[in-house]
Amino acid sequence: MSRSVLRIAVVIAIAVALLTAWQSARGGEQAVQSGPFQRGIVVVGDSITAEYNDDPGDPLQGWWSMVGRHFDANVTTHAQSGSGYLRQGLACGGNRFIDRPEAFRDVAPSLFIVQGGRNDWASCIEGRHVESRSEQVAEAVDHYFDVLQANLPRSTRIVVLGPTWGTLDQLGRQRITAIVYAAAKDHGIQYVSTMGTLDRRNHVIDGVHPNRAGSTALADRVIAALE
Image (cartoon, rainbow, N blue to C red):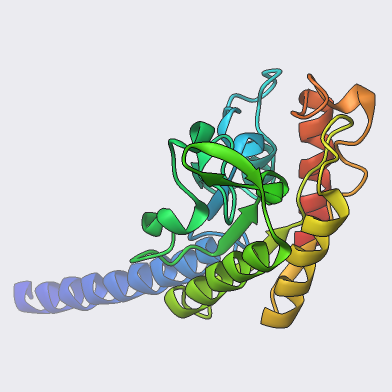
């Protein structure tokens, strides 16, 4: 009698274990599919990204924070004020987008966003800002996109935001925007125009950088494009 009970107990234990494993597998699958960017979001950018935080409701909550929270995804930023595809940041004492390999090597985020370009109206020569040539900018943008596509897996969605221009930030607007757009198109990368997000007086702090309304407008544009 005790052997029969033991056998029944063993059978029940095995059945419960199999059922639990099956449910866990289904639950794990559902967790992965519960959001589009479960492997996280990486953002490379300039001050429009670098000078903002991840505090909900804060006046300086970043557009990227709003996007990440909308999709329930972790966001990692690699941003530096004054930088671009061509130009070094931090008043020519910093680096360019391409100089941040940690953003695209040995990582496989669900989404990789490039935000920037407005600073590339100039390049750094001997520590000074000198107006850039269009050929220089185009070469830098093309090279960066080549590197991203060579290093990121196909499962990573790459999105390029058009350069953001504030009300007082117009130098090179049409020229640089056209270069970034053309490069994204040539590489088959999704391009999201930012026109109309920061070029309103009530959307910027200093004519260049967004206030909360500006960051919200930029985030809404990105979210709409991703959805």
